[in-house]
Each structure stands twice: as C-alpha cells, then as structure tokens.
Length: 265
Image (cartoon, rainbow, N blue to C red; front, side, top):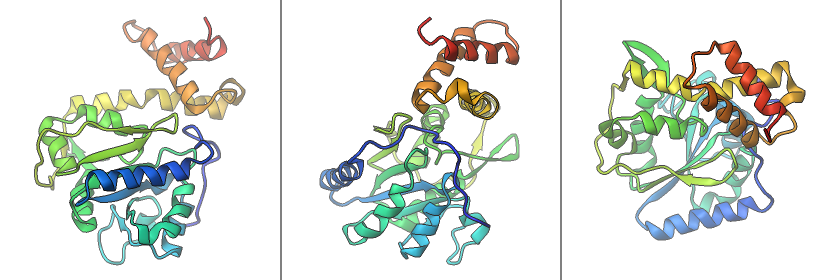
C-alpha cells in the first residue's frame, strides 16, 4: 500500500515553536506523575508517512489493529499506533510528531500501565458492536474523541481509561485539551457494545465535518478562506440554528452555506 497524504488540513496548523512547548508538556506530565508513562497515540490513517517515520526510526510502538509481534502491513497503514515518549527516543519521535501538523491524529495518554497493557486495553475499542454489527470506533480521530467520551456510560469510561491519570488531545484550534477522567478504574472490556442511542449521537456529532468535507470537494472557494476550526464553528452554529426545526438535509446544507457566505449576519 502506498503512503498517501491528505490534500487539505483538517484542523489548524501548529504554531511556530509548538514542538518545544510539546516537550515541555511531556516533561510537566512526567514531573506531575513520576511513576507514569507518557504515550503518544497517532491516528496514522490521516498521514501515512507518520507510520513510515516511526518504522524507519525503529521506534518502539504498538499497532492497535493488530497486536501481534509482526502486524499486517495493510492494517498498520490505517491503524492507530501507540508510541512511548521517553527522553531516550527524543530525536526519533520528534520527526513523527511533526507529521501530525494540521491533522486530528495526536493524543497524549499518561498512565501507570505499560505499552503492552495500554495496547491491550485500547484494542477492543477499535472495533465495537452496535446491535450485533461491527463498527469502526474512531476515537483516535481527535475531532471525534470528545464526543466519544460524552456518549460513554460511567462503566465504559472507566474501562476505556483504566488507571490513566490524564488524556490530552489536539483540538481543532491545534491546542492541548484534557478529557475528563473517570471516577474509578475498571479492567479492560474485551467485548465493547454501544447502544443504538449512543451510535446515533456519534453520527450526529460527525455531521458538521461531513458538510465541511462536502464543501471542500464541491464548493472549495466557499470554505477555503477559513481556518479549519473557523469553518467548523460556523457550520456547527448553522446546524444548531436548525436543530429544533423540521428541515431536510438539503435545507440544512443551505443554512450552512449561508453561514459561511455571511459569517457576520
């Protein structure tokens, strides 16, 4: 499978000097929780050269789609990948992290669990069941991650996070934000099931991004003047404006178009 790269940025670009701040963030997390490990979770499907860099640099990692010692190259190419962030690996993982610029593909997890333990905990969440049918759970996509946590039950939240001290993700504005930590820790859930209501809420959460993607393909001049976070906010506002009205999808699309055309109205 050839490495590919998205043709457009999906979140705002990193600001100059962000990598130095990133290293300071890691250092502060390690200082706050000395026994813990700090892991990067890369959603490599957004920028496959990131995986290439990880493998070329011989960085220790785990492919969440295939936990075997020799994971399938096809699965690796589209898989979330866990990488421990240690001082010894500094020069190598920096290059991989740079490739996340503009893409919703980077999280930080602080936990006492080892790399293998965390991989075993997160692996069942990659494919979940809804009414008995398998569903790819897009939690490594940092645009989806806050909505994912919002729909989980307290028990699911506890099984997903386990004993983690913190989970940070890159927002649409390319800033770090922490997810809420559960009140308790539970063992890994080997058979993750979502209700139909949870599934519907997740689908609704992705609507604004789907409309933004539609405009990028079919009406690029409408959306290109905006930063990704700005375009998303305007589309989300438009959808909220019509949420309590009985409107067809095309009408919802038209409302989003108007909000982008006249953002000050």
